[in-house]
Length: 81
Image (cartoon, rainbow, N blue to C red; front, side, top):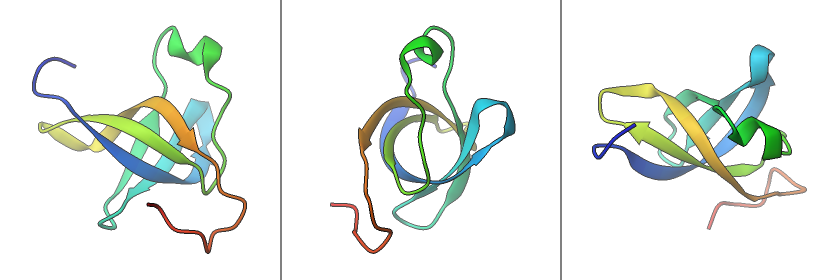
């Protein structure tokens, strides 16, 4: 994605078809997230409520690439720290 890309954390809201996920940032912005290329081999998957690190570009803030699955929460009431 180049030098202009930046990383943020988001909460997975739901798994969508074709290996994509609906995610929401802390400020309420919703976007589509995906795992690309060789990372698909090692990605265990994400469930609703999991926290993932996304790589976004300033050119299209509606789509992000999942870099790492960072945390799993058992309850939706637990917050992102």
